[in-house]
Amino acid sequence: MMTDPIADMLTRIRNAVSVERLNVDMPISKMKSGVADVLKREGFIWDWKAEEAAPVGQLHIDLKYGPSGEKVIRHVKRVSKPGCRVYRSAKDLRPVLNGLGISILSTSKGLMSDREARQAKVGGEVICEIW
Image (cartoon, rainbow, N blue to C red; front, top):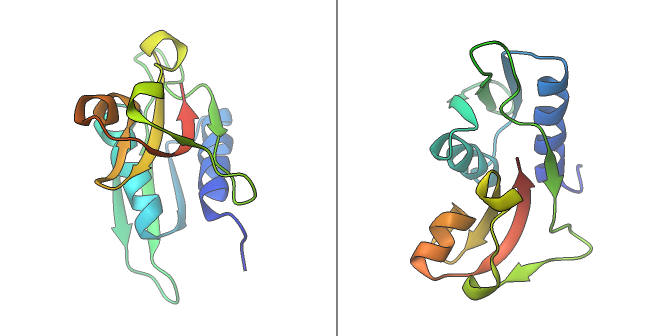
């Protein structure tokens, strides 16, 4: 049993980007597909899809690179961990890297980026930061 599946997802993405793979697969969950959806909306990945497989479904993420091969995802950091949760209110959310990166939050309205959370005026648990 895995203690922190979100950290595993972020590590798989970080490792795949570091060796410039075009896609990455991992076991699927609602939280992971929500994180992938936020990454797609914010332009950090091309697309994601859920694939049925036995015994566990797979989440397939197509990674994004620039026109000359530069990495779109340069840094991935897990903020809230199982042993130490981090929560922020809407007024305490600050732009990551002066707006070049995002924080992904788990709010009462679902998973969203820090930009969307500030616009909706909701806070929540800070899952990770990506730039």
